[in-house]
Image (cartoon, rainbow, N blue to C red; front, side, top):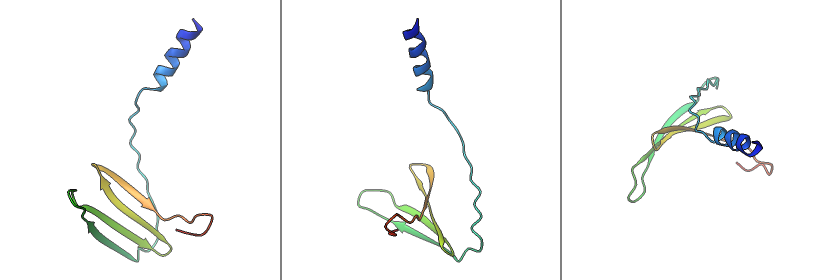
Length: 80
């Protein structure tokens, strides 16, 4: 009985979960928005929008149909 209950709980936790998340960001005044397109041999072009607002910056792109947001972070050594 204990094994059956454990197996049931584990299989329930393994089910896929669909969730939609939205994020509202307040960057303040945006200094610039630049769009770049990168191409690699044999691959589709990758379009990236860079949003620069003071010390904050974001890179927005779409990878395999999924929107992605990349942000700058400062590491422990100070490298970005």
